Image (cartoon, helix red, strand yellow):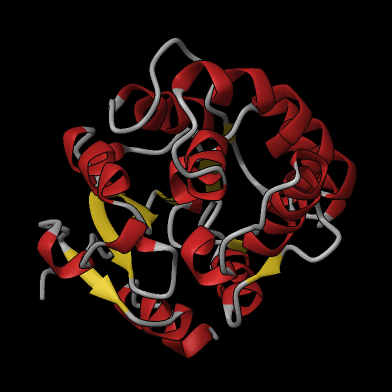
Length: 225
């Protein structure tokens, strides 16, 4: 397994499926919308695996066979439902709080690069008391580009004062690996996330970890955990 730089300049994370398990709230919004539309919602597991792809993917999974026009029509109502309950059942994955505490104790700045729109991502992070802790938060509408384009990652590095060659990008989707690698960061895929039905070992990440504790070890911070 490759190793990241020993003199880390920072660690950037994807949000949904990497730091946060936000699928319960997205599913609850989908169930409410399905009830309004008179359709039976799919099983939770089928929705969970596509959460990293965003709201449209969740809607397509919940309203199978719906065309693009129908999805776009329902999207604002779905997002309104989600925004209302967002943070109710979303929570950091087990071990993530220890991971963030360890980074902060080691004085390694950490931040977030997500494709989630800012009007959703920022209030969610605030409700979970994470927004003020992050050195930088780059959302899906911060720039014209989104992951897998490397620009959001490079923008986050610039804003947080991180050297990309000594930084790490962590995510649960192949787009995260592609964005991090293209930006010159050490890329880490996590196996605990949503994965979009894929195999993180096939994404050509520099490393794959199965738990936040394993990431702490990979980053050389185990003694501080």
